[in-house]
Image (cartoon, rainbow, N blue to C red; front, side, top):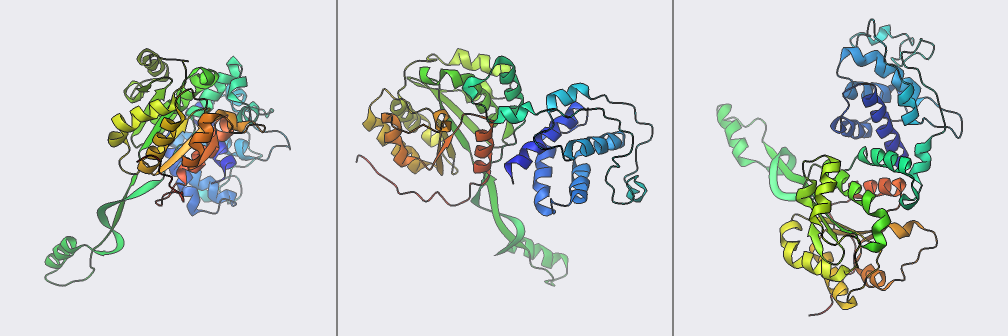
Length: 395
């Protein structure tokens, strides 16, 4: 799906939640999946799909219609809807008589079911220049305090999905394999007649995600948002997410992030990590991860996201050996570098030069737009491993 459309869908969901509609991330995911089955260019189809999946109370029907009309109308060139300003100006008025879903032909638009732009609105709003669009492309290190708060809110609303893997287990379905047990039960149920043989298909499960993040001194200006990003991934994905941070040594923070509010989770992490903003020893940290945690967390075709700027004070041979081992043991190895967003950046540091041959995807992580691209990359991960040239080092 187009990243701009996904971004607008997230803003639309936030607007509906701000108006009091019960729109949770699960319903937004259902809407994103449903858009693959309709022609998105037809506004009528899009409107009715969103209305069906996001509105679950008759009292919210008219409110949703007006919100849809104002949000998705074409603004003048260079102008977008500024969601925070818009929500401050929204007033929810009592609805006298909500429209009936069973009688779409009576809608005031004349028959297509879309809201009538000439009808007096129950939502009052203005169109202003979108600060969110500016924030999407602004480097995290340059954010002011207010912008940092806005970025955290947008980051929390991002929808994360990870590609699935095919397991050895089977489930009832329309596959090519014959399900003998269910077929025999059907034969007995129908007096010995075989009417429809039962079949089964492979079962798919979401891949585990492992995050290993650098919190050394060179990454200090990104650390706060980095932890917010890890927390958003942990809360936004249904599957298991394992999180580690390192500077001079590796610390597992999965337990501290699980089942807590953001501020409390960050306080727990700060108490658990002994070496904030210290030196960087990527190779030693990866060696600890590979030998102490690899067997526990890399099963099931895990995807590993390693976040660092590549500045390393450790031994290059150790880094080379551990990167090789890590790449062999995971399904995909993604390295996120906040410096990669600069047009003048070149991976010339010793650590980055050593690690590059073992990286499947080398991506930036410096603004919201780069995180949206990462979300697209994670959702597109398939069953086949990346076309990589395995480089084995050592014995």
